[in-house]
Length: 68
Image (cartoon, rainbow, N blue to C red; front, top):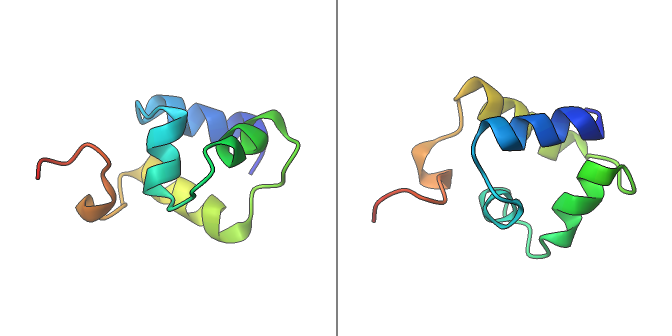
């Protein structure tokens, strides 16, 4: 997954950098920025989760704005 694809999916999902970090269980939101600017390669598992977000296949429990 390219940095551009990563960012496009995040934006299309309506997630902030911090919200996406929460969804992906990443403590440092700076990691999301590094994925997006290409200074860090998107790992296979993160890429798979991003594809799930893009396809609407991520379980509801991962929704950072779920009522609760």
